[in-house]
Length: 522
Image (cartoon, rainbow, N blue to C red):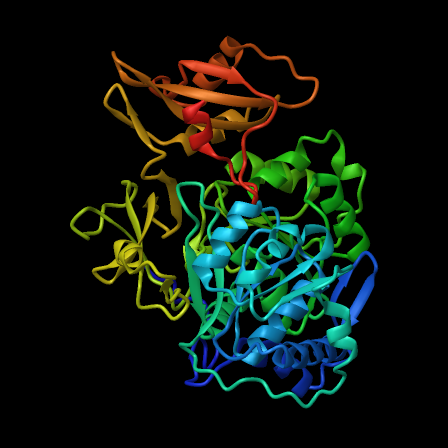
């Protein structure tokens, strides 16, 4: 299943033999005369493309002098901040490989990633440096620390200040050479190191540019940490490549901080997860508390947005949410976009260059409307090179010409895809296949419900009871039977949960995705 009716441009997703992500983003903007334009801005001010290039070249020179060279792996333990951008681009400029991990990880998790990734150095901030400093003996090229330092640290700001020349050349790297690594959250075992090649920036950058065409005044912002590939692409690398401005949301995400940043920085395109939009909508009268008129569109990924959330957002905030589907092994795969009408609840259609199919166990297409395995053609330059030190896991998900997403889905008559759930999220009750997403969407249509998660509750008689765990909006009082009665007006009786429980907050991962397993095990 591909979508070919959208017009592309000559060279779309064509990968040159020699390619470097820093050259394809920052270097090209400088060469095109875009140096005076604003590259990034935050609550403290802004930085132009030329100023950013100066810092990147200076840091790359300093890192080179510390002995960091081509193919070296370097751990980046940084939240969203200008130091992250400078560090990532400087390392890639050298041909080194940034290793990204969430900045909230504890000492044992940092130690695991350091050892597993073979990192020889680390870059961090002083207030979160301790887990890295304990590993100093295992980091022979040193620990580079910004915004404060201790004895033995290499000082980030000094490396930049003492190397103010622009004559360092960007490494001549191949399109298929490793460019950076991201680590999964590790919610089902040790985190996996996902290795991406330099070709990723063209393959995925072109898809991004085609999906939502950049405008001259665009200011793009993601609410997630840039250690996650979706936020890294949409907030840092794609804006750079497109010559527009990225907005930096410093500090941990909470709805008021997101909205204030949109207002003060004039964000036009926002990327987040459904949970964030639901939390914003749970604030009574939020649309009257902040000026959000700069937004021309928002994006949601990582979990089902639900039609109810889309409709409420559009009616109250006044702009669409384009839901899209992504995986860490590729990033953006397909999604809703301005090229076609939005079908709330769907994750959209594939864009040119990406083939996605809904197939049965024998790799045969299933009829329209029937649930099957959602697979992605693995012959795609946007895909990862593999899992670091884990060929068996790489082979497990990529074989027979397909990447196996682990998601169940169905397609409608217009080619839009609808996610039914993960293979291990869906379950049977009374012998009938239950899709939690459908019931969660119905729950969210009930006025007093802010969030909901549906999971199985083992039962000897019917296999599984349907259990709904619900977060109510502030000031709402509901009883389980009231919710069940409201659901009976919206979905088939056999889909109505036998169990309805209330909770103050759903358990979530660092990126904001609901952790179903935590509720199942509770």
